[in-house]
Image: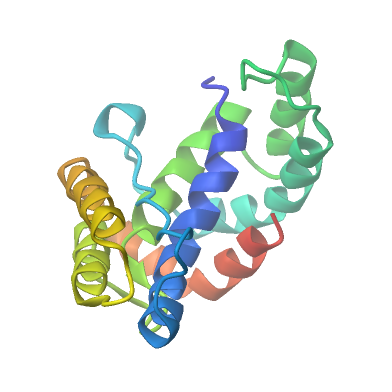
Length: 191
């Protein structure tokens, strides 16, 4: 199992909230030291794409609170990897909530993440991670309050993020995650 539960929580929250930040940015402009969060789409080699089921999404929602609480209780360590005892607890939580293992939970979470990264939170329509990044690029280009260096750096980062987006292979996942978008957002915002 890939020990990236901490990174997952952060990625999902950033993905769900990145577009919300765009609306605030368009209304108030960028704060001098507060750039947009980078895109949160995992790299293609990190995600085993699977067709999601409604039951998996419901299991994810059920497990999320306990997994989040466990991860919040972990001390910060420099490796960023949970120890064996923590992995065993994560595995137990996943199994208690209908998953075969923590690895299955992680795979489902990664696939949810891929879709969330492409949902516009304002319209709740899927436009793809590349579409979300293109919206961010347009916002940055139009922003008159950004320092030129900050704007250049942000555009460069967004351009790199755009190159690294992963398309969703299982189109049915889009409908399922969109259906549960509000519940997923509420669960992830508790992180």
